[in-house]
Length: 419
Image 1 (cartoon, one colour):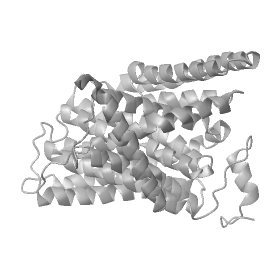
Image 2 (tube, one colour):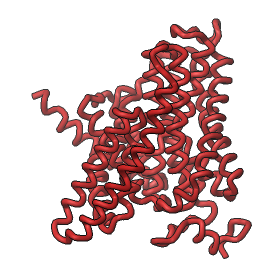
Image 3 (tube, helix red, strand yellow):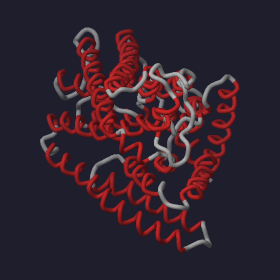
Image 4 (cartoon, one colour):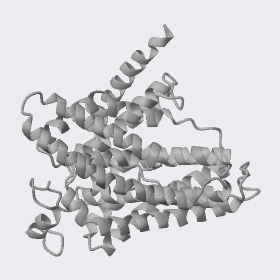
C-alpha cells in the first residue's frame, strides 16, 4: 500500500496549504505565506507527517516551471526590453552588495573558537561561497505574490522580473568562479560560452517558434485545447534545454517560453488554462515543498548568532543593493523599495547552491542550519513586505497594449503622485 502514499500526501498538502492560505488572507497577508507555513508544519521541522519524496520534488519542479511560464506570458515584452539596461544595473549591484555582505559576515564568524568548520576548502573560499549563496534570488515567490496582489503588470514588477533573470546569470557566473577554485574540472570560459549560447539559441528558436505558432493559431479556430498543449510542450522543452544543455536555470527557459507565447492571439486562453492547473495542484505543492526542506539541527549560541546576523544581512543587502541600482536608473523612491523587497527571497535557489557547495567541500555542516534559517525567513517575509511597500505610491495595472513607462509618464508627476 506504500506505493499509493503519494495520493494521501497530495491530499494533505492541498488541504493544509488552502486552509492556512485562507487564514493568512484573513489577517491581511498573501496566501502564499500560508502555503509556505503549511510545508514547515507538515515537514520534519514540526509534525513530520510528510517527507519530500522524489514524486513531490518532481511535481514541485513542474510547479515552479509553470509559475515562471505564466509570469512570462503576463509580462510586457516591450517594456522588458526597454528596461533591459536598468535591469542589468539593478541585478549587478543586487549581486555585488550581498556577496560582500555575506563574505564579511562569514569572515567575522568563521574562526576557531566561534564556528569550527569541517569543510575541506580554505576559510577564504568558504567565506566567499557564503557570499555567493546570498546573491541568489528566488523570484517565484515574488511572482506569485504580485499575481495575487494584481501588481505583476507594473513598472516595478517588470523591473523585478528582468533583474531576476540577469541575477540568475550573474549568480551562475559567481558560483562557477568559486567552484572552479575548488574543482579544477570546472572551466569558467566554457560556462560563459554556454550562457551566451543559450541566449543566442533562445532568440533564434523564439523567432522561429513565434512565427510558426502565430500562423497556426490564426488558421486554427477550433480545438483551442491543442494550443495550450503545444505551448506547454514548448515550455518544457525550453526548460529542459536551458538546464541540461546550457547549464542555465530551467525557470529561465520557461520564462522566455512564456514571453514568446505572450504575443500570440490565443495567449489569454493559454494563460487561463495554466492558471487553473497551477492553482489546483502545482503551486501549492511547490510552495509546500520549500517548507518540507526545513530540518534544523541543534546549534550553538555562536551559530545562532551567525544565523541572526546572516539573515539581517541577507534582507538588507538585497534591499540596499537592488534599491540603489533602481535609484541610479531613475526609478522613484517607492519603486526602488518595491524592487529591493521583491528580490529578497532566496527560496530553493539558495538551498540548491548550498547543497552544491557542501558536495564540493566549500560549505561546512555547521553553516547549513543558518542557511536554512535565511531561506525560511527571507521566503516568508518577502510576500509580507511586498504587500506593505505596494500600498505606498500608485500601483495601477498597465492598460493592454501600452508600455509601462509611457503610461506612468502621463499619470504620475515628478514627486511620484497621481496627476
